Length: 401
Ligand code: BYE
Ligand code: ZN
Image (cartoon, rainbow, N blue to C red; front, top):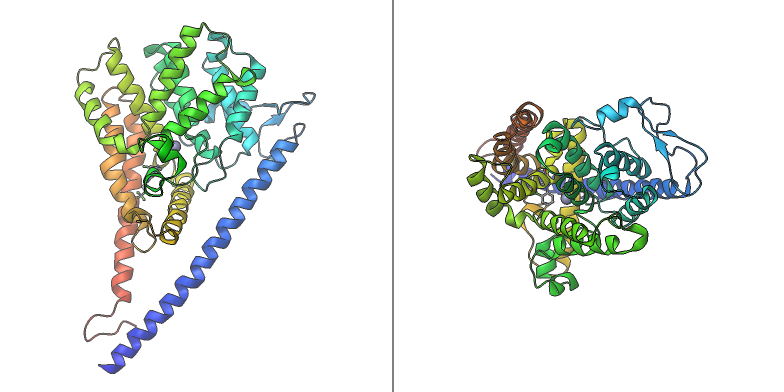
């Protein structure tokens, strides 16, 4: 009996040592990733003349056009333009500047620049300011904004939203996608409320983050040099700002159940002439895009999950230091990566995309199928994880070798 105990104890301390070593590695990797992102951003911001891409030889790269000193200007290859509409688009290969040009292209492609007489230079300045107002968080950063916007652009095409919605509604969807996490501090609403941060106090604990993203969005649109809505009648501009606010506020996951319940009711009798139905559809669209990483191929989606957990674990460290409660899904001691993802896919993502499929059946193959694939993949990992745990935990009378 004593021998068994000794053996378990030695195994335990071995595992504890390993955790120590591995977590210091995780922090080192995280630090490197942040440094890389910072350097890329610096490089991108300082070089307006040349392509700053890390792999400039690939045909998918943006080709720099020379002779424009004040703004980074790229032309997109045909291949990129086609790829940009699909969830399989590789969004990890672009420098921050290139993502800027891609979004600029989407606004032109959807006819929004033409329709609303948006000044080309103002559009660039607005996008640059938006980019500059995203922080260097592991997850809630400029690349996440790009992802959500690229998915929205893809959905607008796939669901032929330009035939179903007005240009104003399409513009609202795109602005909301780009701006929806502006100045995200990397700490969620629960932290804001528990730590009684300035944001929580300012907004009386009601969706403090989302209200802040709205405030920064309005701030950028109120400055002459970044107001892409300046050519419109004040009434039209107000309507767009109001629509954008509603969509950004809908991204608060605390409202998920309520929004999905309302949407489920109208989805069966969906009527594109009914404004209430349209508002709900738009809310569900931005929610889908915001949480759509798992729709993408596994090589593309996997780093996002790691970055999100990294952000969550950093919050947990801080909460422990400050004596605040730690949410179970953020606690590195309680979280199982595959387990949480199975739950999230089964209870949030798949039902949400399935309900949208009732209006747009074409989403089934492009989005719901990949989501089911991801769920099966994580289920498989979960089983393997459990097996490994079982075989490394000695039960009574037996000692695992
Ligand atoms: C959500 C809310 C805020 C920020 F830990 C991000 F299991 C998210 F709960 N997103 N976005 C995508 C996600 C995903 N949350 C989860 N999985 C995603 O794929 C679940 C989390 C890892 C956890 Cl919902
Ligand atoms: Zn987001």
